[in-house]
Image (cartoon, rainbow, N blue to C red; front, side, top):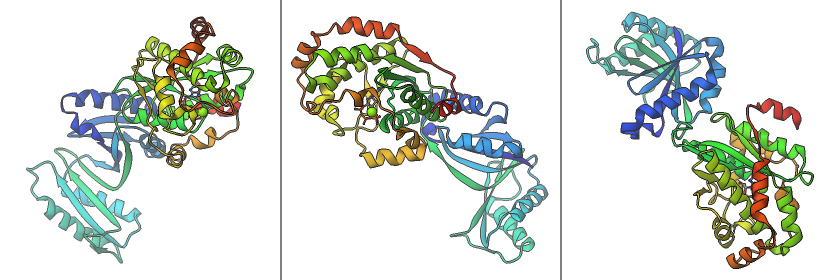
Length: 393
Ligand code: ATP
Ligand code: MG
């Protein structure tokens, strides 16, 4: 018996004309992560992954972190559809399972098969009853269901289904630039955007010596955790020290954060356009801090034309934390290394900033030159593994 994963696609079935592209990218994404551990084929609305028993767990863990999958069915492929073969293999699977009640459910896509689906289920149910002690049929709430699927030349048997992550395969909907800080919110925002099929690159603003190497490594480590749900995430690191110091020295402190964030947005938009990212993504959540009131968000957003997606805008903090725990970023996010925003936070940041004041204050610093210089000195980090970053923490 050949062990197989049978994949049911998530929302992809609604993508009539484009389904080919979605499936090609889903296949590519899986292949990129499984390398040569699985042989991938398609048949009638499903993807099949043939795997060696010894690679089973590894491939399963990868599939559980792949967007575009609705359900993973774990089973066996039989190389012919003869009842004798089905019976023998089914009994082998039954032998391994511990249960009291069961049912058999059959699907037959080969309509020329001599028996109809309910007849096959009934017959195989009888075979199981004869071969195992202390069990009975329960068609409503069985401990285990044995699914038998008969296709043209092959049959499949499976009894385990695992829910996939859903969403679209990463890369089917273009690319976005994630503003990634070391906090809890932005990695979750990145994850949620990837779930909609968007590939991401990340931008991180550092302010050495006010922020440490550890703070940067923490962000790189978060990028690599999130990248497990897609592919490598390129991280653009921007040295923000000079800009922050100029703002700090020259601008009334209640406007520090507003102006600083306007600068971050401006730089992010340029980096996004250079790298063919169509949107910016960040972890802003309405009302969470002074810079995330509606007035603040409006005045900050005003400096860019690129769309800004805020996936966690309407989540409360506990919801974000719960998702961060689920996706595996929380423990890294709460490591205590300071980010550039927390260092230059004034005691009383403005919560209703005015556009005119921002523009007046910004004239006090040569921000266009500073932005140009920061972008020129950008460093881009790729191909680091999560493990390497963790070792650095
Ligand atoms: P997070 O938990 O993601 O750090 P936060 O609640 O601390 O968010 P802010 O510090 O106001 O909120 O930042 C809001 C968003 O701005 C972040 O979610 C992130 O997308 C972006 N951001 C903040 N600081 C940085 C930074 N140093 N580099 C890149 N992006 C940043
Ligand atoms: Mg933050």
